Image (cartoon, rainbow, N blue to C red; front, side, top):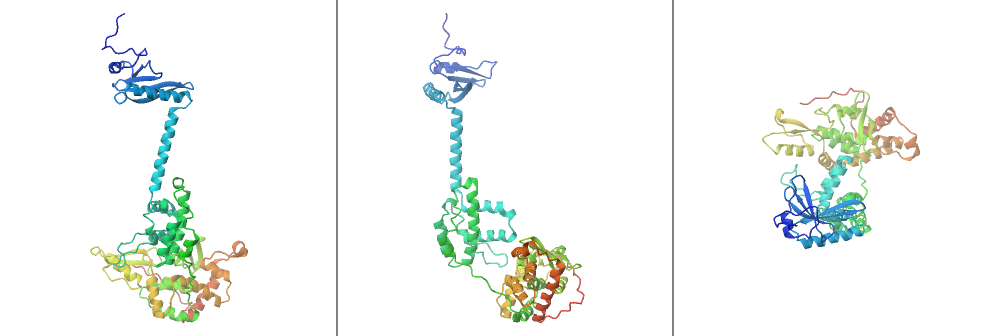
Length: 474
């Protein structure tokens, strides 16, 4: 029998002792996509060749009646002996009942987990904070969103209403560059100690937000073990931040004439009316600022205010408040609207207009064609403080809400009435489950409250006089 020539391709039906020459002569038959040359030296070792001429070492064997085929590597990178050693290693694994595919998957999963853990370790507080605020934003109100932005702002940005003055970094800005895993109890204690020296109230607010943030982060599957939910709750941290002192600012009966006199002289008619309505309704500042014309019913004498407890609540539209609202210009959908004079050639016009409005001054006069309604009233605090200073008073906007509740005590009015008008949560079983007061009943008492406050303030108002009509402003 003639021996095969060196140039002949090896017989694929037979096992041979693999050599470099045999592998080099190996070719894939024309009628197949791939072919295998078995090694007689090592069980399960093959050389695979494709129609494109690519050649690689593979291992093939049976495990629980299933064919296991694993690629070892390209023949140009692996020597025959190296391939045989790898094939024997895989064979040993199969003899012990271990599936190399499952082992590789587990190893890859462990590698991915280690990579994920490393990425989580590298996450900064600022990165996670952005994710947290984005996720929770749909569940928050406008003030909550604003608090999260201001307390974490980096600062150094020019103020919109005060050209040349830059914003100050929020208390939490110092913590944002830190890794989340490094936000420990000791780090937060040291931070609270530094910040509380200059702005303790802001630090207490920041701590409340930080506690909620850490509880959320600790519950996230990919952040477990990276955030300590109790890091901001240590007793020492609370002591460093101090306790908030309750605010007791309110208008006493004898101070009403002075307050009304100076507030009614504020040049901006919207702020003028807003502050008086805030006192006479006892509403929260944002509830009243968010009032729209569609929420006011002049016919049935009611207002539908946004309420943080019930969502919405109906309150009476008393005669003097109705008179104030009738005198406001109907610029847009907001009752307490804001108008700015915009000049397209001057980028600082809007900034100056906002500044004048915040101080309670009339907006600068400009061409009607450049005037546009910007929305609702946002910050009447400056004008109110200026009026209170002139009146010799120290009073916040929330102090007006406190004043309403305190002044009601002078009248023989059930406490539940004023509480319902102000939107306080019902107290006691009867208030919560049994007492239901219609708007007409609230109006009887509310008009009595308003009339008494105006009388004490020396404000002359004829309740029988018909109110004016809304003045539309283009």
